[in-house]
Length: 140
Image (cartoon, rainbow, N blue to C red; front, side, top):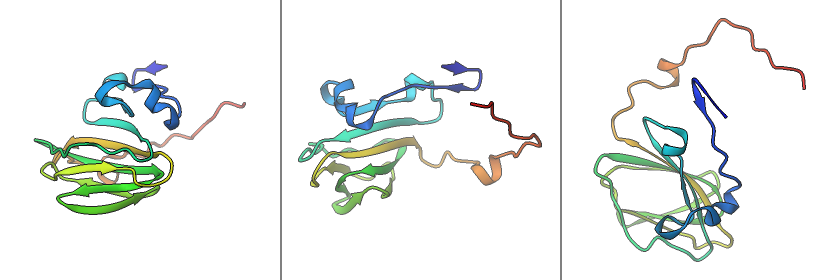
């Protein structure tokens, strides 16, 4: 379902992400093209127990926000080990050398939001507009 001001994609449960992506992106479901995002890339990620990303990476311009929503693991940034679990959020600047591993029991689930560093000019307190309009919901 899409509308003038919104788009929707159903990726399924996080526990099925490994089966919907293949190759080097296995366990990673990108949303930018599927939703027509114009200011960010978002990926849904599943890293199986005992798995790790076998390389470090940086970015030329984009910072990343890692939002951990299940499991346990470690994110390494510039040689520092950060213990991660459900509820952990980590911002990594473009130059940060990063990699991740699942050293917990069970799968590690996380969302990564990637956006150009320094590009945020407005946020909810300066960009949000509360409308003078009553909220209505159809009866179910």
